[in-house]
Image (cartoon, rainbow, N blue to C red; front, side):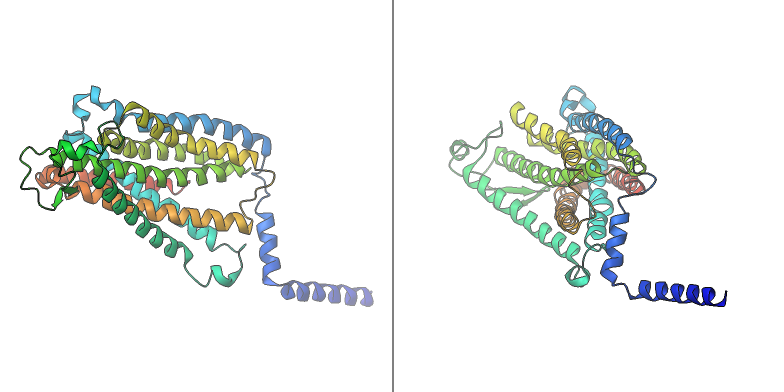
Length: 359
């Protein structure tokens, strides 16, 4: 009896010693492998929820991005009305919170995961570094696009023409308007047409760059949802993403409306925004057998893409949307409208921040 007790004690001691002797990477790998299993993982039920998500998110996205485009039939929602400015401020707050409260934390979680080696991922803040580079790259894109369109001109249907310079007496787009702050000498222009062209140019650049950032983020979100079989995670994500796409779409739709694109260009931008998240979900479903969201490759790719998207969205929300409007002549001329717009920004950012609890 004493020998059996002694053997048990030796066995327990060996197990404890072996468990402490296991390498950290092995323990982390076991944790990563076990993350894809559990009581909430049901492939059949998850697939049903994903199919529901595809159609519900598609509908919410189309409603959100199309609402501002049809606002011309409602006089109170015309771009030059106060209500449009307040609604756009709310949507800009949603976009700002998306970058700070959703995309940036997701990137941190991916690149600081225990499934990645300590060197170099935990020795250097790659998320903030990539987000910073992305913001600078967005500024460069913004700047070069403005320079290009100034040189080549633009027409009202979204194309480029060289005849714009001739229309303005050979001067081209000599005056650039940035959020209502004029840069350059426009004294020779007495009809104000050049100012309108410059503002239109600015709105088109903003709409296109903002679309790029939203599309990248939407594909990553959809891919993660489509590849997951955790129904406990997918269920609240559906409601959160519908809210997200609805109001983010309103912000993008307002930019598209102010850009005064033709029907073809509007349709392309609406289609890309509305279908990217559902496309990501379908792609994730197709890759669910070979794609693991806890694999090192997936974590690195998703983390870097999210960091890039966060830098772009934060720059666009702060510089091209909020600063441009709040420093512009319309809001600077009315303290009352400015106060309501700030309230709308806080409500939009607050609502989207609350969604971070589930998504």
